[in-house]
Amino acid sequence: MHSLSKTYNMTGWRVGMACGKMEVIKGLRQVKTNVDSGVFDAVQRAAIAALTGPQDSVRKAAEVYQERRNLLVGGLRDLGFPVALPQATFYVWMPVENGLDFAGRLLTEAGIVVTPGVGFGQFGEHYVRFAITRSKERIAEALERMRGLDL
Image 1 (cartoon, rainbow, N blue to C red):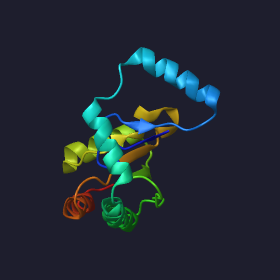
Image 2 (image 1 turned 90 degrees about the vertical axis):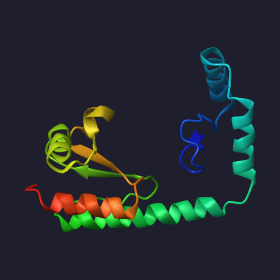
Image 3 (image 1 turned 90 degrees about the horizontal axis):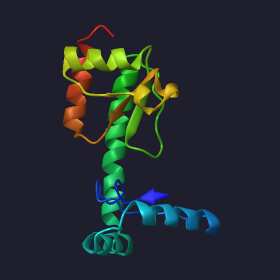
Image 4 (image 1 turned 45 degrees about the horizontal axis):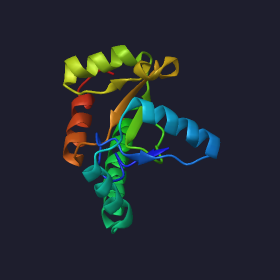
């Protein structure tokens, strides 16, 4: 399954695709048909244009996200956090003792919003998730705010 949300900045448009074994796709189609009535025609046409048109914007967006990712991961590592370099997402997962507590501290003490990993299931409890959807300047500002904390 793949959506156009991130690649083509069509978040919230709920348009994507699925590939796989015919019987699985048939089952997905049956469920989807009973859940909603399909995607608005203009959104489908925009998706076609995105997929068949020039892809320069996709490459440029990937470069922007890579710069942001490198800035955030480098800054978190400088702060002493053992952060892995993500390869295909605009989220950075950081291991912490208690994700919920850590996220609360960042919010109240530094005005930084991160997502506690526990919201994604039991294996996320010891993580927080940063999004690299903000500008490099805002990411640098967040890192500077974190430097001032006893983490």
